[in-house]
Image (tube, rainbow over all chains, first blue to last red; front, side):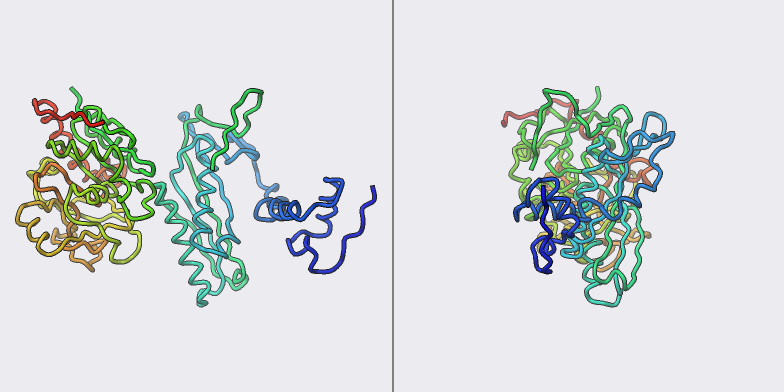
Length: 211
Length: 247
């Protein structure tokens, strides 16, 4: 089928939603038609860096994912490594940058919530949280506001589930003035025999939607 | 016969697992008591553990006091049963009126999580009888609302009647006044734990159950848990009616 050239005005919907012209082509090719406004908004969310890691994925692919102790690797909710005696640790790191720039306490808190979810869905009990944070000029009022909210948000969510923040790292640099980086890591402990995988193949499985 | 001690579990409890572990270390049989049940399943004592019962969104402990299990706990306490509230459990007992006073927001307005020291004011209570001597006990605090408050008359009455069980202390054992770092939350008269007038219900903000093994950084709290277990064992062995009919 013929696909028309996209309009070029800067204020067209897909560009305002952060979708590039190339991505708009790809969406049309998949649907076989133009996406409506709602569909475009959904693609803009699901194909955002926040949700799809489209920019960082090529870099993540360069990291090692196999080895003697690896029990679960990419594709699962979290990585799991055997530590012997029938025990294993589950761990994962996740960014919650833009949400924390908009509302630092809740942005950071829900980052912890998301990463804890990835740990306990593997059948592990979360035992520790770490954070790696990047902020702009430490002298600016906005940075102080962000640091205060993010640190309280990470600790506050962890406290509610009884998981301590045991360490982390913090860097201030002007390049982070616009968008801070808020990375949180959770570590869980599990008995290897209780490992739960994300896949539930086969007919007859019950689907339960929470929330 | 192993003494059975209940551990209340609310949605949002998160130190119940520590209480269960400490009870096992102390030689008791822990029995988890779900918040929806009013029966205490015939246990000889009850621990109301730490956490954030029902989320504690409104005020710590204020919703939990209306739960079915707290009806059972209040009935049990009224019949002389031993009840020990730790951290959030203390807040719940205070909201329920089972121990005097209130736990206000920390004086520093921040959640405080660190190792502190407390000293028992009494070593003859059901909760401190095996502590041995009045020495500083090291254990962690982890709370945002732990500032003990009561009006001056009530505080005087508590002191006179021997209801102050524990105070926050400096390393030399002297009480840590509000504003001192050794008093983590600004509690009036350095009060960390109190009992009711009858002496069978007590609340404590710090966590003896997480200071119950040397590998955890301190086992100073175990003497408190062991005191509770020993007192419960005596009551279980006696003919005192400890179960009740509330449903």
